[in-house]
Image (cartoon, rainbow, N blue to C red; front, side, top):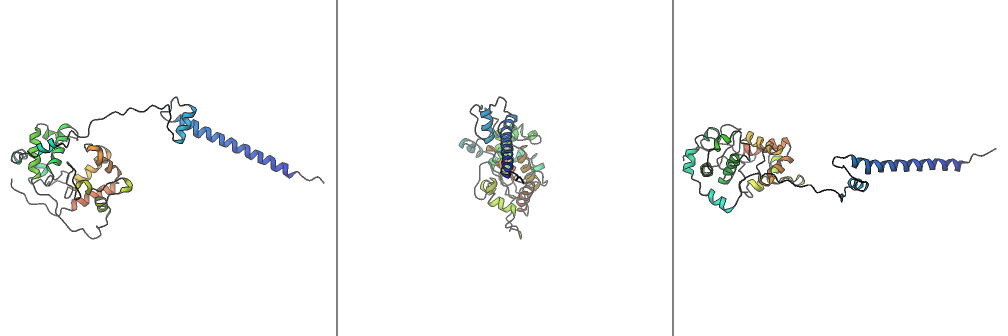
Amino acid sequence: MITPDRSSSRDSRFAVWIGTTLTLFIAAVAIGFVWLPSAQAGASGLDLWGAICSAVGLPNRNARIPVTVTGQPASSIAWTPETRLLLAQGNAAHGAALATTCNNCHGSAGVSDDAIFPNLAGQSVDAIYKQMEDFKTGKRDAALMGVYVNALSSQDLRDLAAYFAGFPSAFTHTSPEAGSVDSPARRLVEVGDPLRGIASCAACHGPMGVTPGAPELRGQQRAYFEEQLQALATGRRHNDISEQMRTVARQLTPQEISQLAAYYANLSATHPPPVGK
């Protein structure tokens, strides 16, 4: 009886397995390191070494460094000592005479009856002036406000800012509602979300500090607040210097935007009474 040569059979299967593995490996290398990188956009003229560098994430020595095109500044306002000195010269009495048209939307005491228009009462002079100047120069969408500010001089804008900044804030201190101490909105306001690169709202808007031109948020109209965050998130509004608000807003979910708007709006339980000027 003849015994089959089992070792020879195993050797042939092993050779087939090795050959198949090598073939698949070479095909994977060719596809992953040559064909796919070469097929990507902007890979025209890429040589073999350049394709391999691209596949493993290394810089290509032949790549051209893109030229950065400097865009227009987000705002024409510069917070220099000269600007602060000019703002201190605003004439609130003259601003009151100019504000008769403004009162139709923003209220006679700087507190609007329509949630789509922002409250101006309690805002700082520089915050109000910056927004009006941005509307006038087109840095902020001036579809509505441009009609009112285009004919005004810079001194007129400073006078209006001084007038509205003289009203008491719409913010009324209220005790946190039950269950709101650890609410997502409150955590964003007080702590932010470092893992997503979101600074606390209070870091710029108070109470821990105030950035020149940063508006007071407490007691602001909910619908207006929410619409502005959405505009910043999508880039429709882009007059934030250094893009700090757009960076934050893009990280927020629609639910968080709604929660923040409700949080700040609810801090105003009552409107302040009109103050004679």
